[in-house]
Image (cartoon, rainbow, N blue to C red; front, side):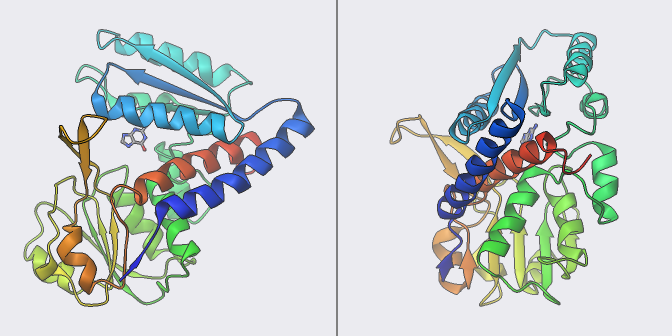
Length: 292
Ligand code: GUN
């Protein structure tokens, strides 16, 4: 088993991003600028947004956080998005999900100008991705593609089984792995909670992408020896043994699966760190007008 080391790859890519951000500053007199909107104070969202902001500073981007209480109305939020859309000094805008129940995430996603949608959730970006056109690719799938590329994982003709069909990870991941591109050119099976014979499906996989949000859901008996395992799980459990007060678990039973895998991402230290890099890459590309 060899580790797909998110720490190593993300640090390397962040150095490249920092160089490009410095060149952009020298040329344009400003830094790439990401704005994040956070509604409420969900523990996970707080952590992720703080990490996004911190990493922006690290690579020489400007970052701004707009916070709202959960009582914010949908209309207020949409108005703020429209305002940021018009601000020429902002390159990327993300609204951290999940949102409170009274706010429709589809409306929020579609209100963000697709040219600033560095999360890649807007229908224009998703549609362009399907057609292999320049677009913002959702940060986690983008990060996973960078990881596969960094380790020269051969994906051509391989059977990739994606577990989970979320808008954020599973669905876009299945499209990217099937595209005529490198990485890509896989035969893809997109599985989900209603899939019959899930274990038998996963057993056929050369590449498993686990994005279901259930601790240790993927066990060793589901894995073909030599498979490549990408664990997107970020399952938080409270713990008295860590400084943060919680511990992160993946969707994969790492201890028992890793001995039979060829490559595997750890949690933490895998996909999560690459997600941030995907977001930074999109923000830089937006600033440099490389896509729109
Ligand atoms: N919630 C979980 N993942 C993400 C993400 O990639 N972007 C946003 N905006 N919210 C999320």
